[in-house]
Image 1 (cartoon, one colour):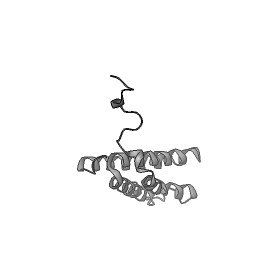
Image 2 (cartoon, rainbow, N blue to C red):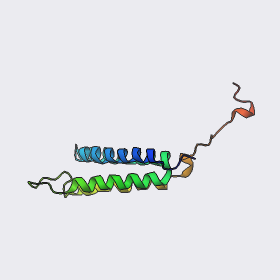
Image 3 (cartoon, helix red, strand yellow):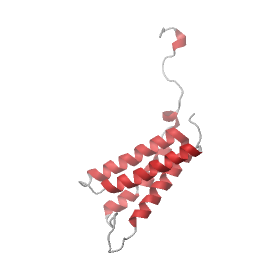
Image 4 (tube, rainbow, N blue to C red):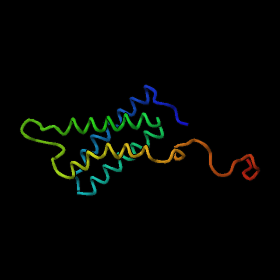
Length: 127
């Protein structure tokens, strides 16, 4: 069973969430819809990493950080500029927090550290 969310791991999850939010925001509009798909795959991969590294508290923290980054960059800037446009592709990118949370429904055994298959104790795998 992976360790719980320690302060050092929490800092790592915060940095990962910041990176996912910023990089995903940068690529979600590139070569539509490929950029959005790539950004959502990055979010899902980060969710799997957080789940394997810190169990469910890390996934919740990651989803919160990603959503916070998206909300921070979605504000209208002086001059009327926006980074995440008020368009369907922008709304789909806001779904990245849900993609991160979706990793919570993956089977627990995928994240187990128990060995599967043959064991060396039965004599079929000699050292």
